[in-house]
Length: 168
Image 1 (tube, rainbow, N blue to C red):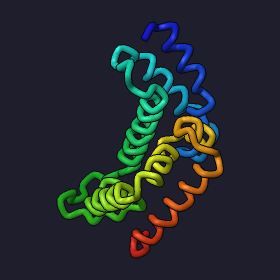
Image 2: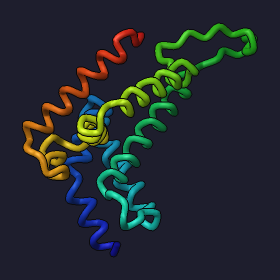
Image 3: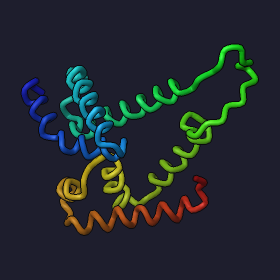
Image 4: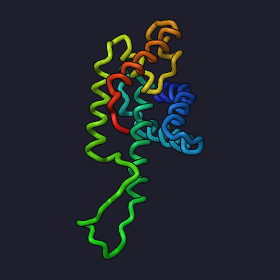
């Protein structure tokens, strides 16, 4: 893909990127920062983009990974250990168990539940999770908008049943 076309495509999806950034951060200022960081990262890594890959999906994946990496960085920076404390016998209580083995197995369980959805529900649901809007999914799948909304709704219902014993 030519550099000018790459930049044009990137500009064309800025609205989608902002929407996804707002979903991730739930804060307009943080979303703007994430959008800017993602745009710079994508431009810096333009040579790594493969033409036959979904451009929007690739960019939103970069954004999601940046968000996750920034979150982990903030958590690490907020972890303070006092001088003279026995680090090996430290009892750490955390508000967030993002790095815990339980979280990893929880994510595996959720991903397995999503994979068990029938194809008709799984595809629009995973597209929605990837940041696509209903109308984009409808366009991409050549389906009416109402059908896409219904399939995502039914996917959520099915996941709620399958994961009903899931702990918070």
